Image (cartoon, rainbow, N blue to C red):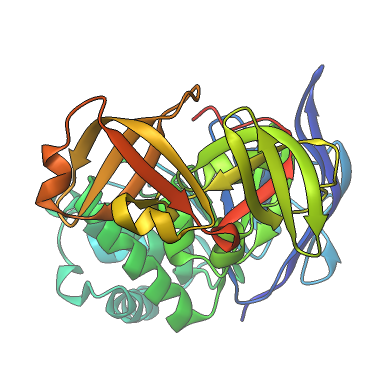
Length: 363
């Protein structure tokens, strides 16, 4: 069983500081939903309000349509996995998994049986009698998930559970978490500041900044059609051009910058005559001969290239405050460019979005 989670005008204040501001959102039953944002944006505060460890200052949290006011964490149909996992080192793995069942008075034989079933789901059947210290970091993560599932939650809450793992293990565990969620059908609400985690695992993402929910959408929507400059600059990399919107025709508009006039898709709230920002992803930038076919083009001074195996990041200066970055397939000739060399660059209007002027992400 899984349940829908609804936040209705939820605000949380700590004295004079407002951590979460008027968030209204419905997380569907059986959905893998991620709150994504920098440290201090309010995402963990939302998780704690859903779990019942703190109450909203204003607004209502509903789980399965039921108002959660006055219902403590132990009475809610939720399970919370902390960043530090909080496993018991003196218990074997199966007892860690079955701990919640023991608290509920379930007999030992039944606890063992259920623990082994759950260890099968997380592919740790052979580790049932091992000590926690004998497990790898990824295996401990899966034990924590099995323990949370043992009490049959309708909503699983995960507070940056992969942050302590190295890169390769994090990437592996992303796929594991998604597989477990799909297999169990439990609603997963995931907290992270890692955009790769959110984009890889989630059905939908809520991007937060300074307590405000900036945008909710699928990974593709958030990445390709950001609603605000913060989302455009926080989720993925982007080249930014600032100026004033001139001509506008249907879905496309022109932005007049001090470095040229560029055409892009008009985003939410972008209007002719107003200050705006144009965002284009590095992978959509063309360089060299390919740039001449693009509608938007410029000539920039090459500064350096960063080789990253299957692709190269090419950095150039076009009189902008930040370098213009193009990401392209590995090409040995790019590594032979000399600093200061003129480099044609360009991009297509459909690959760029124009948004009203606003704050950019700092992280």
